[in-house]
Length: 221
Image (cartoon, rainbow, N blue to C red; front, side, top):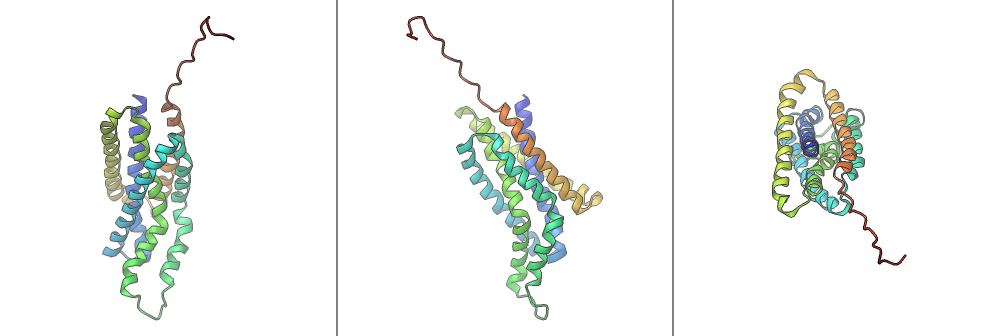
């Protein structure tokens, strides 16, 4: 029971964090690229690319390493990255915008693509890492072939519920009561908690060791 709760919480928080980054991220990009339709399109598209790659690579990594603890390092890196987004990304976003001559209008193609570059620079890495969670947890918890369908369904359901919560909490609560900087720092701490939880789950998910063979009296020393 403890394992099921920990797994559900793990993927729930992962889905929650991704949606917080997506929703708050669009608001964060708006200060440099405006609040146009292109900003939202870019943010959604980049996040979906990160999720697709994370799901695919996460499944391959799970088959290779078969340890939940493997996620600790990438989760810690993602957590620190998210925590310091307000600190180190403004110059990067400014460089994307200011590379266009101030005396000329920005070409229409770059009005559309600059937000893609900005979103990729800031949000691709953490969302990619967070996407590793669900396929990894499927591999770690589905010990029997006849349980794979049930386990994978429950894990992706928990992740989606977390994403739904992230959308509404971001849009209705976080934006009203917290600064963008505080939201990023809190989300970074969530990813760091996931890093610690992955180490704990590594112990819980470890398969039991086979019993040692007993020597019989007929065996020679």
